[in-house]
Amino acid sequence: MATLTPGFHGHRRTRGDRLPPGQFRTEDFPVLSAGPTPEVPLDRWEFTLTTEDGEQHRWTWEQFQALPQQDVTTDLHCVTRWSKFDTRWRGVSLDTLLEGVATGARFALAECHGGYTTNLPLDDLRGGKAWIAHTYDGEPLAAEHGGPARLLVPHLYFWKSAKWISGITLGRTDRRGFWEQFGYHDYGDPWREQRTWND
Amino acid sequence: MRDGNALAGPLSDLFLPDPTTAWRLCPGCGTDAALAALHVYDQGPAAVARCPRCSEIAFRVARHPGQLWFDFGRGGALRFPAS
Image: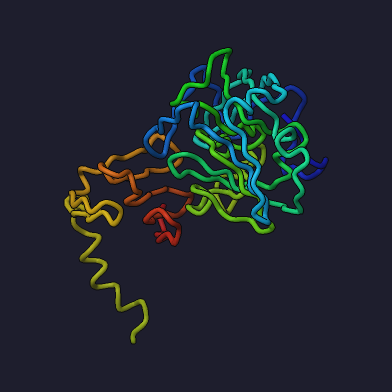
């Protein structure tokens, strides 16, 4: 769990406290979807990073696999109140994908097959805090969990870790995503219980 | 022109019957179907009802603290006070 500026959290954490307030621990991996599971063949898979000026950077599956890969073990926290500890992922850091991309953007909108979107501050995709993950627990990521590839931003509620990701568009202004425009929090820090607009 | 209080009568008629008996003409694909035929995804943060043919969002319903949200998939939600 990455930490933000000391004092920025509205709640006191003790060392070793891994369960955010209002959460319960589960051993399962619940499947939560807001629509049908899209089928995305690997030979047609593509990830597109679009800057605020419209400049596009694209990776095919083959190019994406050739990038430096990282193994990540992390806890997940879903806004529906389950948390799962020590999940194991493999993927490409957003730091790698953003290397050499000229941008002054402060915000990012993740876009997915099936139409799902979610918004995040660009800073939360940098600094070893976010990945495009394609492997879970040593196996190719199952479609029901977002395969072939999903965003993984484990320090925020799991709805920010968009399944079936197809691209990220950077922006100077924040554009709300699928849940965020429906009353869910723009940032979604589980340690501050930022579930809805009023939190 | 009258203010929104003029909606009290017509909207109370609209929201009282069992809404699943209503029919919906999908603007995406033209399917005309009863709400009971929609595909509902309600394991996530809120319920999302979609056209059974083209999967376009029919509407979403969320229970937030103190408010019941209802929208047609692109924001602009109606927010009803709720306990």
